[in-house]
Length: 139
Ligand code: HEC
Image (cartoon, rainbow, N blue to C red):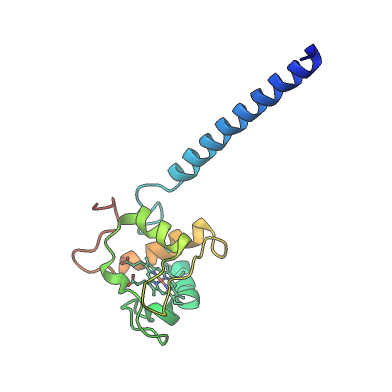
């Protein structure tokens, strides 16, 4: 192998190691970006915004009162949500398939910003019933 070729190979290796590294850092960063609890909890302005986003984007399936009784049939009762704030954000971003049921939770990651998802969460927390969990995941 010529010196130039070897230098090229070495720098290609270095670059690929670097990009693996950067990828891993980015992934870790993306996961840690979602705080353990909602930074907008109790924020009146955020709750108002969240209510209108909820009515526009979610109520069709989850019902105007978030009890799961939307026009489109059954979706989860969000007043008894138990998966914690990170579980909420993850579910809303990625959506959820329910095997054997036509109704699916669509993924919202591309349509709503984190801020909007947090605002909706702050609103939903105001509707939470006893036993609901919007803090740390209970798993
Ligand atoms: C097309 C109908 C539809 C729309 C629109 C919709 N959802 Fe859902 N959602 C579902 C279905 C179906 C499920 C799954 C229910 C199940 O697992 O039994 C679900 C589940 C969820 C869950 C998990 C509930 C749990 O207890 O595990 C959350 C949180 C949620 N939706 C939030 C939202 C939010 C916030 C919006 C608006 C941005 C929204 N959904 C819009 C249908 C919908």
